[in-house]
Image (spheres, one colour):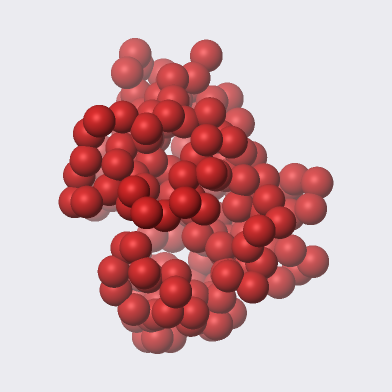
Length: 169
């Protein structure tokens, strides 16, 4: 499974590469993006190193696919969507953990939902049968995206985040 290009009505999702790091430093610079997840905006060196690891497309052990897309609007990066998937896709119970981040300057226009929905469609076509997202209980914008994607909150809380789930098919 590879993170090939994905095109929606307004967006292009490009497979992550190290070349995206300089532009993504600016996209990820707003401290408000880390309010619920912790951490701080990455610098160029950190992001370049992270993207070099992620762009390989799989974990070092080979038991997970790492699918990462940079979300672009009118050719400019505005965020990312990522999915972590077991390598035995198509086996009953295979799930993908998904996440999305959108530059606050572009939030509130449905772009995160549009991008994540395109990834969900791609995952379903590849045989994934369950989606999972972990969302801080106070992060209402992410909860709305998850709801629009058909995920529902569970009672499970991991590292302070609620586990949201959707069965596909």
